Length: 405
Image (cartoon, rainbow, N blue to C red):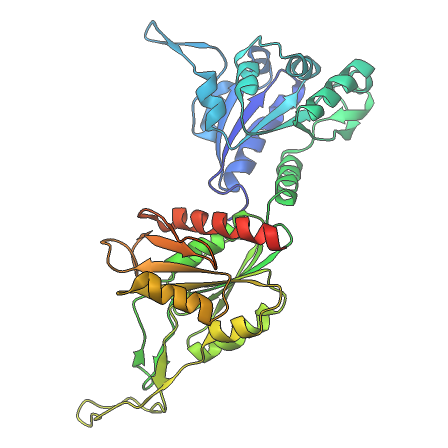
């Protein structure tokens, strides 16, 4: 999974020779997990066909305000297109298009979408070296920068005119890399280490039996993905779970027991900016476990249990600058018990889960939480997908973390 996974990218193509590279640019974004829609200026069709771009993007390609459907005119809603996008990229951006953008001249669908955009906009210029260096063009690019548009640097090389110099549009993979690096640097958790625990722990009775619980790890994995999307380097310490995640910024460390989770948590806690303990750690373990499977015929009369390490209490006791978040699963006196855990374990926040709501809690794809902080009124959220809950949790964490860091 990359930074662009699940993101919506609106690609605008203007009429320069570099437009021939845009099918590979579309494909590069799709390989990163993005959805791409394309708007073309009329002149760009001289260099690349709408059919090619529709095929590689698997979406219709737009180039005019009005489309014809069996002789019935349909309006291509440029506002809707612009608001759909998480990011807008204009590549290639010709001198004419850059000038129109800088002066707010709305002469085609692409420019109308740009002027309606609310997302971050990137521009990849492409033109001959003298045109690129002309003071009027440089002034237009500077104007776009003042307006918040990110103007990519051009490359130096052979140009369509036969000359050699600056003005070449960056290669598709370089454009994707530039955007990814730029976006990452501006993410709120860029350069921060976030450590999470997820899933259950299994405490062995014998080689095939264990004490455990029904935690799937889904909440913890969603939190990890959200932390990575916010730019963090993520360490996800997972108990036994069928889940996995493919993201360059997420390292998954697998453990089985509470003791193992305790040791790995301590190892990564020192340099963590944020630690979220969402795992459902077993509270007790057998004081001994059989080296061979206990036969049914033999049986056993009792299992002597001893407490497992209290990971969260230890981390709270040795906390320095870490922002420490716990989870609480309660079935009665929920707020009172969660508040007590928050104070007793020296936490910065605690997320209260409830099993009293249908479709919430262990194993499912939804959760209903209440977020508690010291000296603050609890914040209750509606039943949501666990991915949406992860967004809510980090929204609250960031509000407090930014004040203390």
